[in-house]
Length: 112
Length: 111
Image (cartoon, rainbow over all chains, first blue to last red; front, side, top):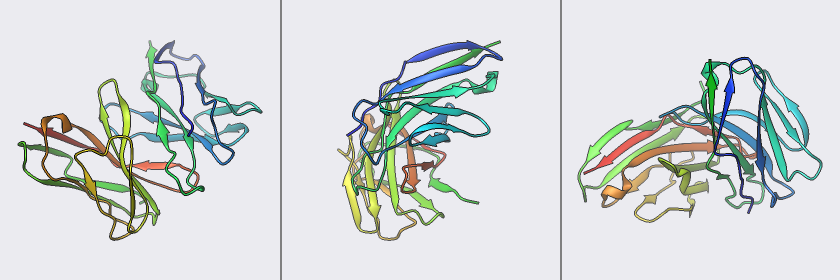
C-alpha cells in the first residue's frame, strides 16, 4: 500500500512559485496521484490529479517522473490566500481495496 | 450542485450518550469514507464503504460503527462516545480514480 512523505512545512513570499514534493516509493500500477488543499476547519479540496508525466490546470501543475516514485505540485505566483495545508494522496479504487491514504501534509505559509 | 452533506456540523455531548453523524452525497458515488482529524495527526480514516452493504475498517475504527443501506448515505455511529473521540470528522465520497469529495466537517466534543 502506497504511503506518502512530504515536508512538514514551507514558507514562501507572495508572487513566488512554490514546489512541494511528495515521495511515494511503493506506488502501485493502478494508483493515481492526487493533491488536495485544506484550510482550517474545512474539508480538503481537490487541486489536481495525474498518473504520469505532467498535468496542468488553471491553478497548479503536477510533475510526475517516469518511475512515479515521487511527484511535485507546483503553485505559480502564490498569494496570501494560498496559505493552507497541502496533501498528497496516492491510490485508486480499481483494485477493490481501500488504498486512499493521506500523509501528514505540508503546511504552506505565504508571507507578504 | 454536487456535494457531500454532513450533520450536525457542531455537537457537544457527554460520555456514553449514543450519537449519529449523518453523511449524504448526491453524486452517485459508490465509495464513501469517514476520516477524523486531530491536531498534528492529519487525516486518519475510520471506516470506508466500497458500495451498498459493503463496509470495512480503516486505520482507526475502534469505538465507531457505520452502515451503508443506500448508496447516498453513510452514517457514522458512536455507540458510547468517550472524550478521546473529540475530533473534527469528515465524510467523503470518491470516483474510481480516487478523487475524493469532502463534506464541510463535523466538530464533535465529548465531555
